[in-house]
Image (cartoon, rainbow, N blue to C red; front, side, top):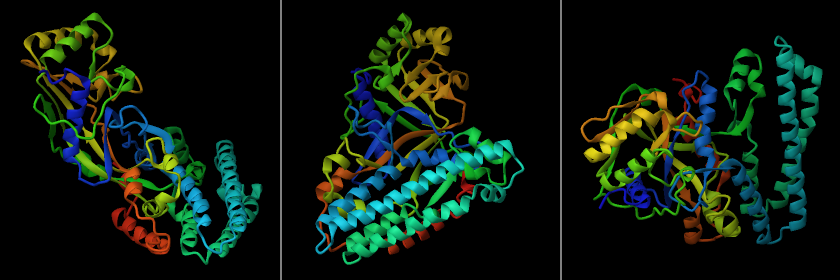
Length: 463
């Protein structure tokens, strides 16, 4: 039986090889990219590199597509959905708090969150105003602008409101330790020590360079998430590693494929275009292929680290208090939380086929390859959704082995391992007055760990 008689078998076997390579950290789910996603973190701007690395750890993978074993990011972020979880947890926890005036606590919390919204809106408007001012008057200092716009005078009362309303809320819930600690967790989301301002594109990065006296004040503020791997070491030395599958390779025990088979869905294992020749190659490859392999020049596991704005104990300890379907099932807001990422560079594809299939591929390649094609997780073409541009590959095929080398040397996200929170809910012991997260201790411990792991955050973004 051919290795590629069905796409389901091929993807399942491919996933299994990476599952065996990743650390066995239950309860995690491992998702392979059906299209290798470029990780463009080698620009001349360290802060832009940090932003692109941050996205890998903050964007939540989807768990709702038919194929739950494929890594596809959603439009949601952990930072925003985690905050919503804490707010909902606050509501549910107050219902179980003896002696708490629930209505008064809700009023105090609402005042606090509304004050935060006003402060955020003010700062967003101020960033845009400062950017326009810098573009028009490049020599104007930040101090001058703040004086002219009365920035500090207008911002001060908003900050005072946040501080005072937060203190009022803590006073109401102080008698109930879980709520008191939860209040501190909410406040940690606003701690400036745990956020970072970053450009979201090259234009914003250039603007910061061109205006060194405050250009970075126009950038967007994010809660700090970091993809922890040493870029300089990653590009310095090759350490080739081959991942391959044959007819006899084992299948994944967790992978299932229910794609419709459309190319855009990422379900087919290869595609050679809509031409008749492409269809013939597809048919014969499925009949003849006996081995598929990708040799990476380097393949590493990178850990997703977050500053102490994210306290996982609040997920592990109190997950049963909120609605399971809203947060933890496949359609939930926090169904998967990224933990580790496989990153690679320099892939070379190899497929062992028959003499017939080899000849057909070579003829097709010379005539049609520039129009784009895909083999396994590597999408080759000229579009923005491709893994690599056609001009950056080299056909090194010989004998009866199709061999395509990627010469771009760019980084790729190969797979993501995420915490599957539903497993926590099903095994959690709900004990409201024990195992209470000590937020001050958790933040202090996380701060120390972060400092040891990332002694110079910006420097690690440089190449």
